[in-house]
Amino acid sequence: MRTGDLAARTGLTTKTLRFHEDSGLLPAPPRTPGGYRDYPDHTVTRFSFVRDAGARASPSPRSARSLPCATTAMHPAPTSPN
Image (tube, helix red, strand yellow):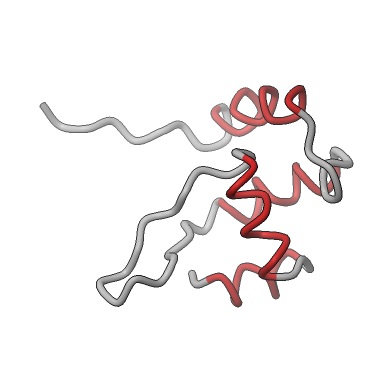
């Protein structure tokens, strides 16, 4: 989903989404061939966690460290074929 769609589903602004990405609270999403961000559906859950944890306005290193633990159980990282 594109940034505007993610913003609508989370209630955050596109600027806030990009801020969280730049802060390391969200990994950079893959890009479409046209260069647009293409967020996976589970990103909505991840942003809900960030918002509910109170990290919306000022993410802390502590919240950034806890995010992978909280979301990995919900959405394990895909494995690469070797």
